[in-house]
Amino acid sequence: QVIVTRKLPDSVETRLCELFDTQLNHSDSPLSRDDLVKAMQKAEVLIPTVTDIIDKSLLANTGPQFRLIANFGNGVDNIDVETAVQRGITVTNTPNVLTEDTADFAMALLLAVPRRLTEGVQAVQNHDWPGWSPNYMLGQRISGKRLGIIGLGRIGQAVARRARAFGLQIHYHNRRRATNKIEHELEATYWDSLDQMLSRMDIISVHCPYTPATYHLLSARRLALLQPHAYVINTARGAVIDEAALGRLIRDEKIAGAGLDVFEKELEINAELLNSKKVVLAPHLGSATMEARQDMGERVIINVKTFADGHQPPDRVLPAHL
Image (tube, rainbow, N blue to C red):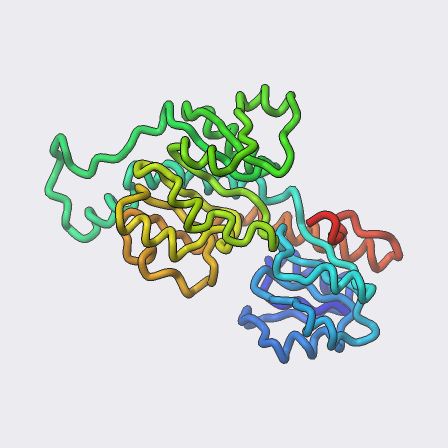
């Protein structure tokens, strides 16, 4: 039996119902913690999303038949993978299907923030536009600027390729240095010291996974290293950045602005960021394309079907991978 925690694309739900004894969530309302416990006591397979927190205490209440968490999402920071594996529960995700869409959206924010796009749209919509003038709503040119990418994985590399086409210089910080081939292709400069890179960049784009080691990786101290004209873009995970510190620095004009698609606590956005004209806020749209959602569903189905057939799922996640 398979239990799905949120409404998925119709074609994905239809296929799940054809293959398995599937319980769907037609209301698309997030399951409560009690409902998640009931689901994991009843089902053999749970298909959660990023909004479902599967922690240690929840995993302690699973039924003996519960064997697989097939996450509908690339990240697994919503799941205590180590505890799950210790309890003999397999965890899978949906990698390699969100890269291009998330990179597109990161690039959209990277363009929108320095050129004050949403601020300009609001001025027109609110009838506050006085008409063209030489000094009205000046932004910053993109071409020639230095882009510092934190996390040069698949998405970081995809952003770098797009950014090069707009004339940006590519710099990056990563846990491990990229291969010579990748550096040559992207004309990318590696910085072993994140602090030194931050202090020299015009734009920072965050693409590292969220782990305990990356919680507030951009801390108040590190954010203070940025130059006053610098911008911060985040399409990874909100908790990688100290939102309160970011809001204060933008308010005090010590950072020029930010484009954020993710937040430390969704629906509870820092007030300084929420009320700033220098910040573009998006409702977690990085992977929100019809194609991406369909591809994610297909990866979930492959993982569940492979597991049900007695084989190791192709997208199995282990603690060592994190």
